Length: 426
Image 1 (cartoon, rainbow, N blue to C red):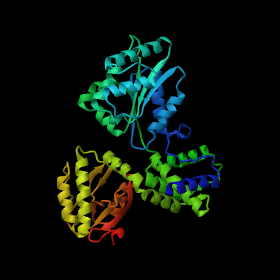
Image 2 (image 1 turned 60 degrees about the vertical axis):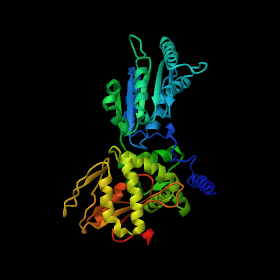
Image 3 (image 1 turned 30 degrees about the vertical axis):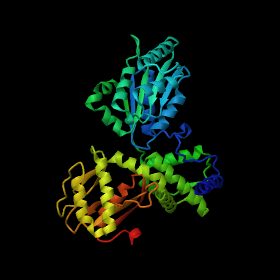
Image 4 (image 1 turned 60 degrees about the horizontal axis):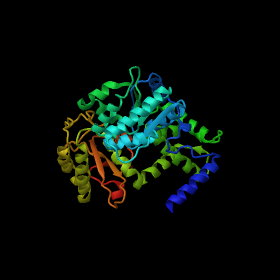
């Protein structure tokens, strides 16, 4: 019933604002592509690489930066003579990915032939394409999840060529981990073959404003919807320019404006919309876990994080006063070592997440503030609370809280004193 009610409200807000469709959908619709400087650069690099018949191309970017939308737009801009195969599920074996590629190219075969037969069939198809003046492109999305042996199989496919040109162009699209995986010693042969690379960055504050205006225009807005400067500022603050997060927050802000009966979206409406997202636990907990894996990059840290959640939850049941010694035990169990800040020097920070640095635990009672995070967790009535860092001043803790808001899947964040529980626990 809640889902039905939400859908009805969404339709009503589209009618209320005079929109033809939902402006901030999460689907990768090329019609809504906003060509920021980075997105235009990525698309230009891909088109250049295809025109030059380069063998391997790679597009990387953090979660939600628009990589899949770029791929969909690229497919629409290719000449009719170009045959394409798009692999969206990279969690395949060597044989499975070959079968998927042939199926996407429309190549049929009887039974379950061996891998060599599949490669021979693909080679014949590519030779026919080359003779007719066409081209063939393989796009693999979420390529950071490809197993090393499957990536090696993909590299072997790039050997299909004539004396003059490559028969198959391969575009790898993935998150930042793809770059790290390709730089490993085991994949150096593949890495050396990638001739075109581009990394997508989040939008700037100015681009965030133009992005929202662009999507509203495509959805049919005719100037009747106004976001105040404060609303834009809060959207960027919460999203850090990540298009997927902008869509989530802006969509809920419009819903808040509809409920308030206003076509002027204020920063209070944005904050209200953002809180409704954070409260949607069943959907955001998997995203939170994925985001933590994205930001916490030390090898083996996933085990430490799981241990961290369990022990911290137990500590909160006993009372937050026991948190100090528990944190010391937990920190010792993590898979990497971090130096404790020197007393009286709270500016010293330890890396926690790519670009996100926080002071670590400190025994000095002067460091009495922490960030309390409540992640949403699907199907579990008890959600483990997470306490992050120790800070000497409330302002330092609040600054860390604001940077943690870039992580998806947190139901709420709050600065607390470590000798008193957060409001929800009182």
